[in-house]
Every structure is written in C-alpha cells, then in structure tokens.
Image (cartoon, rainbow, N blue to C red; front, side, top):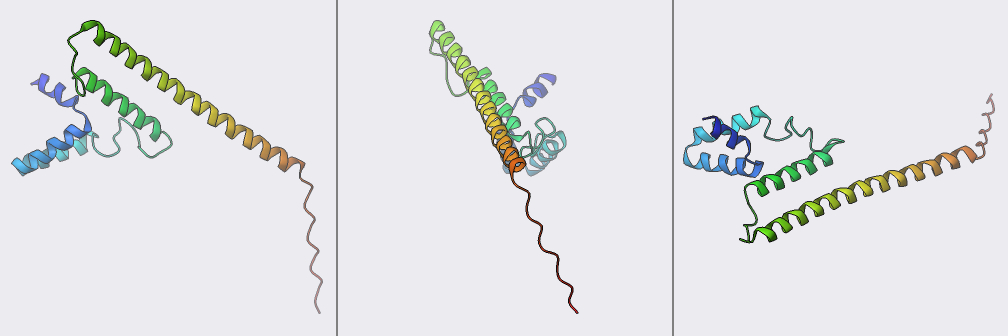
Amino acid sequence: MTGLMERLDDLPKPAWIALVVVSFIVFWPIGLALLIYLKWSGRMFCSRRYGHWYGPDGREARREAREEWRAWKRRHHWGHSGSGNVAFDEYREETLRRLDEEQREFRDFLDRLRAAKDRAEFDQFMNERRNRPPAAEPPAPSPTV
C-alpha cells in the first residue's frame, strides 16, 4: 500500500488532472474524493510547496516546477525511449544535463544584467534629481479685500 502512495505522490499535476477527470466519468464520488484530496494536500492551485505562482517568487516557483516535471519524465522515460546504444544514451543524457546547466547559467546572467541595468537607471535618476536646480516657489497669493 505504501508503494502505491509513493507512486501517487510522484504523479505530476497533468496526470492528477487526467485522473480526476477520468474518475468523474467512471464514478463521480471517486472524482469528488480525489478533488477534495488534491485541494486538501495543497497539490491544487497555489500549493504550499511552490508558493504563490504570481507573487514575487512566482517565476522561480514555475521554473522549479518545470525542472521537477522534466526530471520526473526522465526518470519514467517519457518523451523519449532508449536508443539501445548505451554509449549514445549516456552521451545524450550528459548533453541534456550540460544544456540545462548552460540554460540556468544564461538565465542567471540575464538576471544579473537586468539588475545592473536597473541599478544604472536608478543611479542616473538620482544624479539628475540631485543636480536639478531648486524649483522656484510660486508667488504668494495677494490678499483680496
């Protein structure tokens, strides 16, 4: 029984959605029970595991979820099958790992580049603001009799 629970815990979100839809079609109480379980366990919507998808850390949460999905697919051999040649399969896995690493490094580089650009624009704004001549005070209103 624990083996079944561990396998269910490894299911990605699309598989859970498909399971709920099929269970509603076959026998609706099971679908309802699955829906309640997904909501209760935090696997549905903005789960506790990834934080809020649209908050300040949402991009990072989505990236982590994408990487977990890719890792799950690789573990379960979804999306490709072995070629039958062990040396080629190892080469392919190493190349994919290297490309993932390069993609991560490039993403980090872009983040640093954006931060540097933001810093330069902010510094320019602050310098212009400091060097701006003081605004002339508006004339005081004349008293009316």
